[in-house]
Amino acid sequence: MKKILIALDYEPFAEKVAATGYAIAKAMGAEVLLLHVVMEPAYYSSTEYSPIMGYTGFGGVDTIELEKNLEQQAYQYLEQCRKHLGDENIKIAAVEGDFATAIIDAAAEFDADLVVMGTQQRKGFDKFFMGNLAETILNKTSIPLLAIPEGSVH
Image 1 (cartoon, rainbow, N blue to C red):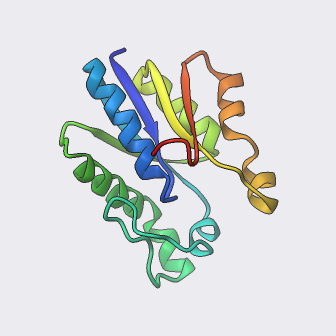
Image 2 (image 1 turned 180 degrees about the horizontal axis):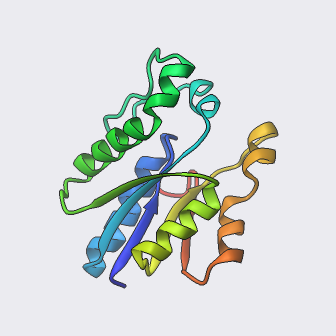
């Protein structure tokens, strides 16, 4: 494997996903791309964030301001993740769109040999809105996927 894409959201579990994906990449001498898929502003403004790898979220930004800065915030988050992992050679990308499609497209563009992402039990609106992301990705690409269940990595 020469290239590994690690898809990250703003959940605290993302730190474990990043560390696991990076450890695999480092062991294989693979290039890494950290990816965040930018969603609608309402998705971010309604969520409370715990610090993740030194990133503290959107603290007090209103929805209109948030919409203007989503991509910039995503790059700041990914930059903080790269810094946390301690490797300036890690590539970062923030893309807009549907989670599954954006991850699949980014993996194809990066020519990834593996996609690493976390999975979590979603409830209510999140489950309806996002569905089973890992399953959707598996059904739409031939790129291997390592889906790490929340709570499985210690």
